[in-house]
Amino acid sequence: MKKNILVAPLNWGLGHATRCIPIIKALESQDFTPIIASDGVALDILRKEFPHLQTLELPSYHIEYPKNGFFFKIKIFFNSPKMLEAIVSEKKVVKKWIKEYNLIGIISDNRLGVRSKKVPCVFITHQLNVMTGNTTWLTSKMHQYIIKKFDQCWVPDVDAVPNLTGDLGHLDKHYDAIKYIGPLSRLHRKPLEKKYDLMVILSGPEPQRTFLEEKLALELLKYDGKIIFIKGKIQAEQTVVEKENIIFYNYMNSEELEIAFNQSDKILCRSGYTTVMDLAQLGKKAFFIPTPGQYEQEYLAKKLKKEGLVPYCKQEKFEVNKLLEIDLYKGLSDFKTVVTWKELFQLFLK
Picture 1 (cartoon, rainbow, N blue to C red):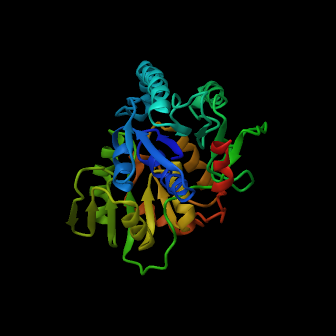
Picture 2 (cartoon, rainbow, N blue to C red):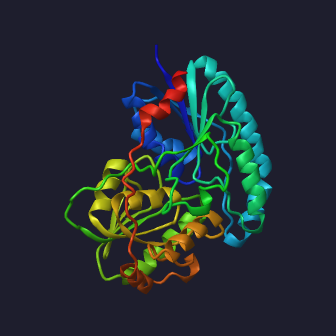
């Protein structure tokens, strides 16, 4: 009998989807059958990574960024009715899928309605506290309330100091249902010869991804070195364009990305948590440009700069000479944690 597990990442950039890749592979290695569910680019990238697995489409949360990051909270507030509608729809469709696909468990990466009382359910998040400026206390309480509706919460970090998430992923009070599983990355360090002086990798919702792409494509023509630039645009076909010192890719699969990271000396990217975990796994030095208005990315960038690990600046203030700061910082390093998948997956066999 197949041990079907629904794996459902949120479609918010590519980070939630890509950090589910090692989870899906681990499920397969432990004789479970993952069924992937998401929407938009998150579903597209997982279909490319796992063409042999069944995929299902979930309702979209309609997450959109304003052109001005200052209005991020306002935009999310006005989008909240659509998000709530999607969450209600998720719950209904998951109820149907449990019977239709004989699910024995659910792993939800930040999809709030993908859960059921009929099977064991896991919630994956690095945000036990949700940073939203002066409303952090409220959004954190709301998020923690929803997390408690799941059987377990897996936090991809370590329950010790130093750690990667800081206040985002750690509470003052300990809960048995919260399991720190160690940072997750689909990438591995390999001893490859350096080919690029700088790697640029973009992700995140529009229109901010495009704004940064356009700004960097011009600014980095002044960079003295060879650049590989991955736009993070998941499209039907891969495209490659060379312009002066930069080679542009619209997207790369995990294998190609792993090679490109290992062939690059330094990284320029957003300070999304999945990227932070990838950089730690690879032991890379980087420069961060947080998504305007996204408090979580701004918090992580400030935390890691304060610890002397990675420099950053705001999107509108970036100039190519700021990349010289990278050498003044230590860079991220791997925690060498080993995820005990067999033990974690016992939840689904009870």
